[in-house]
Image (tube, rainbow, N blue to C red; front, side, top):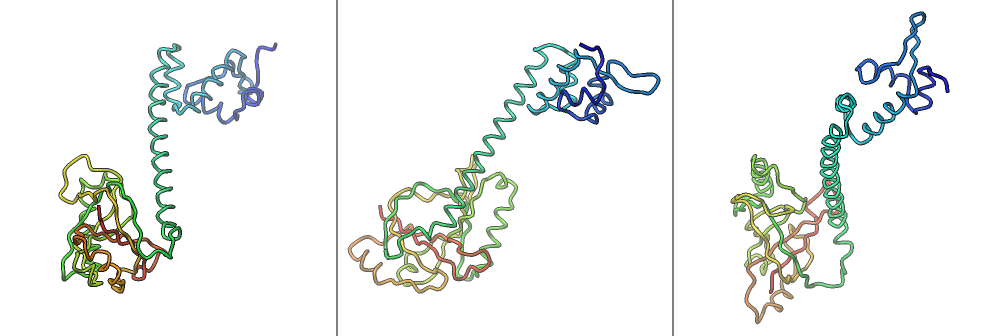
Length: 266
């Protein structure tokens, strides 16, 4: 076995570039074993190969060259383990973030395909809904849609609400009288959040879990059929929890958007 390997031979054997080895030398993490005084050629010895290999796998594990330099200079496993444990924690945090993003993507796929999966032959249908978490703003008789949107934007821009995880499910709480008169009379305008806030905010509320009677309509047109609703509730107490959820079928126009009206019945 020969004593010295040129920088090119070393790079080829270890799967790195000569530029990488020159950079290692420049920052002091690994210097050539010998530099020719005649031509400046750089040579490495076999016993340096494991250092190059170690630098490679530690970089793969996420450590910076400065961290690796410190570890190599210490030369002990005790010097390496804290860095590996730190990378383990970082990688797990990144993994949790990726898992959360995957769930969000799946949620949005369901959101944009929800109505297309419904049986359009059913005028009224029942669904069980789990507890849902909302950030909401009040609505007033004089409001135009833009007023509600701006009010919501102002609330969401509050510093303490930045940390919440929102989902683009907008909706309205409707009045009972408006429901049975086919009138768009919102009490509140809301957006879903993924979880209950860990702090108090007056803009948070829950939609209770339970059985909901549902129907689809173009809510803003105010043309849903009230006859079947009046017949259904003829001998029942009038509902108090009524929400209308927006489901976008395009990304530009919203006046013709379909809504699912959900009426808590038990």
